[in-house]
Length: 157
Image 1 (cartoon, rainbow, N blue to C red):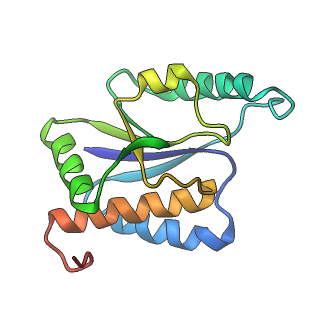
Image 2: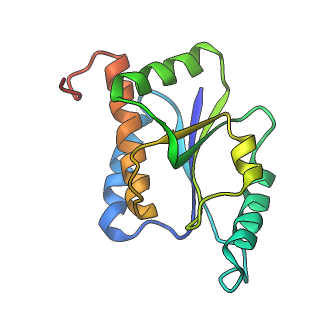
Image 3: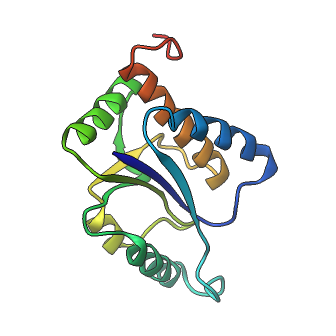
């Protein structure tokens, strides 16, 4: 199974770039992992939020393959503890998923088409975080889940 971490917006700011790179490198020891930073569609900043979400969805849906397993990150999604996340990853691997895509949506969230396309909607927290921090937390939490699966010492209960 391969993991792709997708996020709308700009490349990482220096204050998170090092952390994202570190945890992505660590995650690569368990699953081939790569980031895809999807630029905001052009000329959308002046559009109403719903239209912005629709344009973003067009960009994302064009990149997704039919058999990609899409995990949408959203504060209204299902919350999991670390062990449940580890079990979730193991279940995806056991189901022979070729690609699992974790998506951090745009500033206004995602439209209904994206919600319907998602195979799973996951909440790291009911709080809203800046995209930069979400990227770092996502990479770290996936790495933590992998260490749990391998019974390594990183995660302490």
